[in-house]
Length: 360
Image (cartoon, rainbow, N blue to C red; front, side):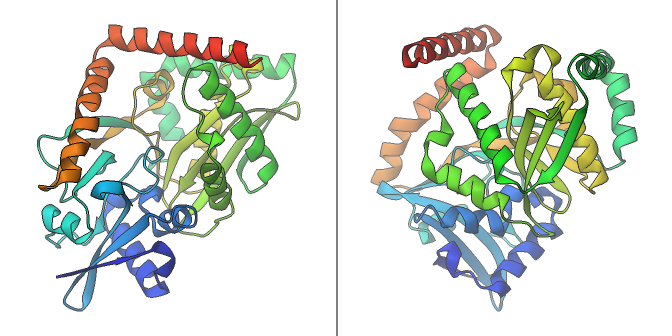
């Protein structure tokens, strides 16, 4: 078995086709964050991006995308942004995690959204739910599920949609638009949301904006950026930018105009998006790790992703442990305690309001 490191831009058409074939052969890997196009797009902005190409005899059996940071610390591609991480490999390939990270020049590889079927996965790693909407039986079957399991939410959202149209104007839904103008509107809403809730504004970082723009311009049968907007009386109300494979759409950046907050614009939009996605052939919407209220109301089930690290004896791994592991454990304790989580969320929102007031 041989492991060769390349920059994503150096992958040829045979390698990209092989990567996609391995991905499409295993349902666990059917996520656009694991697609070759995503890693190639990130590589345009992040020079530390690498791909380990694993060969067994004459066959390429795996692709492992990662970022190499100082002290031999490895992270997933676009760490902090992605909801699915890991290696795309042949189901029969047996790859040792320690051998892999050593060949990549890493002392440690950390992750927080590692999908199943990975050589890095161990029993000690923490598992977290990633809510999904199953559309494999079509839109009608999904609405039947909502009626039976989230009937109050579904009916009230439809009622709010009808009232909004009576009071303001007709709704229009644009699914899979490639127009950059509404994308800028959506990112503006998302920036306001980050600041309002005390979070770091991701779109203050130029390479992230460039990445989103690059992904919007990527439109193929196997992979595409999906911009989705709902308008009321011609005015943008809510939207989402995500990614898709042939069968899976991932939730990434949803946001709405707070002027319409009383009308539940996020729920109205998500239902419209799910209906359009089902009509376009999408079988699954992965809403990403987390237990936000809207996800709980819309989900039909959940996948699981892992958080943790794989390390070998090295100075970098020791430094990484001291910096990251205690913080991760403390965050996990907060997330697992409803009282602590509510208190932390309230504190962040208070900070966000103060910061917004000072900036104004």
